[in-house]
Length: 323
Image (cartoon, rainbow, N blue to C red; front, side):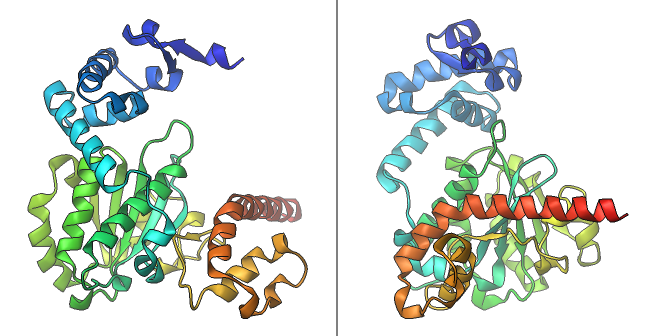
């Protein structure tokens, strides 16, 4: 059955292998041809390119307007960065200080299935000698977001909530580092960035950052007027997926990316209670290990989200029957 949904890469691009129909449906003939040519170029220069799929190659091509020379240079630089900076990826234990700030969480999907990441600007603080950890944190977050993308989806939506942001939160080196990672190593991953409640002082910092943003990324950034936050966001995102951060009831299934090791233990115990037995919410703090909770929480989050979704559907069905 699966074979019926696949075509050989030779049939699609002239290269032997197997290719997903999603790539064919979502690509022009020119893109398919250039994917084949780009693969030939990069594999001849770096054999590890064979580990990267054609969707990745297509994103790099699109980021450089299908220019083979520019795309190949960009892609090879990405491989060099990946092998040197994050050869085995980034784990929670690599970024404990950044996770402790609890400044990023996942919040459902938009109307076309793109996962939503919410960033709380006032919770970010530049750490002394912490730029390297912050960059790894950015990679950690992007990888978590990409892992949540459903089949056929390659982009995500971000909402930057800047209410309460001040100079103590300003981190130009960090912002530029994150921008570089997004544009150079995760091209064509950002679908849209909503910047909400930006204070005047933030615009001074924005003037410094703006020249470093490429034109493709600039088109995806939306500054939301304070009086139109809800009306603007609901154009792309169903109201049920928005959070009380913006004055809208928060989805019960919101997932924080990282939790404070000191303040989050009880909250995680309550979340995990249905899965660790009766009375889980009463588990003494002394019996809960941080590493155990982090590992276990990630492993059961999918089940928790599924349960929340099922409960929500059942509630809607009951309300409909009553009506």
